[in-house]
Every structure is written in C-alpha cells, then in structure tokens.
Length: 600
View (cartoon, one colour):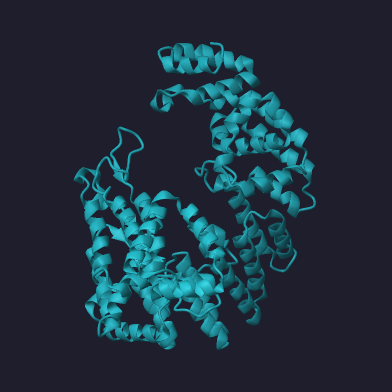
C-alpha cells in the first residue's frame, strides 16, 4: 500500500513538472468526469482528511464543510511564494542604482522613490491579507514577524547613501500592507491574557519606532472600527481611563491624528455626551466636528443654537479668527474658500442646505434665499444657466441688493477662471467681457449688440497703449481663443495667432464650454472682425523681448513672429530690422527664426 502511494506521488510530481498549470487542470477535470458517484466517494476515503474536505467543497458546493479555502500545505506554499516576492522587492532597498531610485535628469540628485516601492509592496500585500488568519493559526512565524519585516524595510531605506536624502523622504504603506500588519498584531494580542491592552501597547510602540515609514491613515482607523462591539467598548474604556497620561494625551492632542479619530469613533458609540463635548472643544481646529453638533441640536429642535454652531463651523472651514464670521449675504463661499476639495464638497453642500432650512424655520427669508444661491454655486460654479436663473429670482425679490453684490463676485470668479495668469488684480477683473457676457443673460436690455459695442469700445481704448494691453492680454487671448473655436475661419486664416493665444490646457474645461455656448448667441462675425483688426494693429507691442528669454531658447519669439507676419507684414519687417541691430549676436534667436521658416 505504501509502495503504491509512493508510486502515485511520483506520477503526480512528473505530471506537474511536465505540464502547465492549465494542462494539469484540464487533465484533472477529465479524470473526475470519468468517475461515477461510487468512485468519487471511494476517492474521498483514500486521501487525507484535509484534502477530502477541499474536494467536498469543489465537488459538492452545497455540502457543509469546514469552509477551508485550500489545504494548509497549499496555504503555506502560497505564503512562502508571496514572501519570496516581498524579499525580492526589499532587497532592492539601499542600492543607489536599484529599482527604487528616481532620477529624471542625469544632473539631478537621485532620490528614493517611496511611492513606487509602496505600490509594488501593496500588490503583494493584497494577496497576503486573506492568508493571515490561517497562517497565524498554523504557528509558522513568530509574533514579531510582521513588525520585524516593516522595520527591516526602514533599515533598507536608511541604507541609501546619506547624500541621497532618503531618510528624509516619504514612504506611506498602502491600505493592504497596513491592514496586514494590524491584522497580524491583533492575532498576537488575542494570544495574550489581555488582548486589548496588549494591542494598544504594541501598535503605538511600532509607530514610535518608525521614522520614515507611515501607515495608511484610512486603513488604520478602519481596522479599529471593524472590530466587534465588545472589543471596541474595551478599547474605549482603556483609552478613556488613560487619556490624561502623557503618552495618550499626546496621541489625542490633534483633532487630525489617527488616534483622535479612533477615540472619537469609540466615544460616539459608547459615551455620546463626552463625544459632543470633544466636538465642541475641537470645532475651531477642525470644521468637520460641526456636523454631529448640528445634527444633535436639530434633533432636539434647538434651532437658534444649531445656527450658531453652523456659523462657527464655517468660520473654522474658512480659517477665520474666532471673533469673525462668514456672512453669506456679503461674500460667496466659493470666493472666501482658500481651497476647494472635491471630497469635502458634499459635506459643505449639506451644511448649506441645513442652514437654509434653519433660516426658514427662524423666519429669515433673506438668508434662506441667499443660502440657496450659495449652495447652488458651491455645487457647480460653472453651470451658467442654472446659476443665472437663481440670481434672477434674487434680483427680482426684496433682496436684490444682496443678489447684485453676490452676482458681481460670481462674475469676477468666472473671469478669473477664464484666464491663464492669476496676476490680474481684483480691480482689473471687475468689469470684463466675461461680466458683459453674463449680463446678457441677466438683463433683457443688454443684448448681443450691446455686448459687441462693449467689446469694441474696450479694445479701442487699449489700442496703441502698450501697458494697458499687456495687462489685459490674458483676457483678450481667451476671447480670441473662444471666438476662434466658434468661427473656424479664424484658425484657417491665422493659425499662428491661434497658437500663441491657445491656453486650453491651463483653463477649466467646463468654464470654457459654457463661455463658448453663450458666445454663440452674440455677433460672432462682428466680434471676429473687431478682434482681428485689433491684433493687426497691436500684436507687435507684446512680442516677447529676446533679451528676457530663459536659457537662450527663442521658440516663443519665433511663434510670435509667425503670428505677426500673418497679421501685419509691415510690423514684422520693422521688428526684424530692429532685432538685426539689437540682437545680431544671438545666434540661437536667428536659428529659431530660420527653423520656423521665417524670412530675415
């Protein structure tokens, strides 16, 4: 019998060595297809119990089994193969010519590419994560296994030469790698007498030992919230009992720290009063603490207090001094915001909506109307049609003064998003062609002929005035680009001009789209004529000075020369004659002119 088993193993090994995995799978499928029920049942009696259990699951998925995804041997084999891949990656660390050194140009100092390393490690960790429960139960690695491997990575990074600055670089482990460490450590803790205390001692100790590596914040906090209610309650009780001690006080000090987020999650579940007190304490530091406070007050129908908290929440969001408030009737939120984060948008929109409902309940119709406009603009500041319709309602109400003030701010906001440079002052963006275009949709008296007249007067006032033209160049370029997008003949006749004014890559695509939709409704042919005549008479004023060229590269000057030659041959000849005298020694300049196919 034993001899027969050895012979079968020999055959099995030869099959595996001689065929691909797909061929072996095909062979096994064919063999099992030849077995009737009696032979299949007999097969389950001659293999070991673990293999039999796996076969039961495969052959009869509805049959109850231990639920093992694979045999212990297969699981260990997969584990070792994955760690071989892990070690292949970590062996590259410390090698200044290795895979994880980034150097874009040969003259630049090489840098450690922590981002690429972390991504490669994450792909392996994604496969390691589902194996951890099984592997830990098999007791094939000691308790400090994962901790040591993470610390080994940091040692590898320290192995780069000091002049590379790798020890000051950033390496954030991915969510799966972070979860692998935490899951392993939780198993370690559960093997001890006091799991919660052990876990809350080991994890901070690991964090303290790391100097370069960081754990993924979301995966870190999510792991704690994924634990059972009983465990989370014990975690809360331990942290709550020790929160005044120096180590825990430091961990909980910042409202943005992972431990503070974890503690907030625990206290909100097990001590809501304490949680709300902490929300009030940290509101000025972190505006997101306003949401649970507002929700609680609304449930208790304490509307006046709820509005006060909303005001404080927006003050925190806008980083205002505690004594100052954001007044929605006076300033657009999109203008007052220092930054605009997509992941925060929905929260702010909800807060504006809550405030509008509160204002209605408190009888403040003016504020409710203004907040509805604020919410709409914050949700989509480039949706011209919808935004303007809301403004029209406000302008025709008893709150028209607020409507006019906020409309002017929105017009200037759109004007600023319509130019490449942000150097234009607010005064220069208070009365632009973008404002006039928007006004054609607000005021019936201001039609397309009115708009054309405004553009003509504007360009006439700039004609021949170099400083004013240079200041307004970005606005003129945007208008030219938009009109050329609508009037295709401009690009055919003046391709050089269209190239020097093109800025599509730098502008908001949705803003450009709505501008152009509205421009189609005005006198495009008239505006086209006015623009081309203006450029013909003034383009020579703003050609870049060769003496100001960066790094002796003159491709920009060559582009402008090409545009000038298209529009005004006389002006082109005058520039060439002047440059022959002023810049005759700039060989790279004349080389660029020649390469552009221009006569000189």
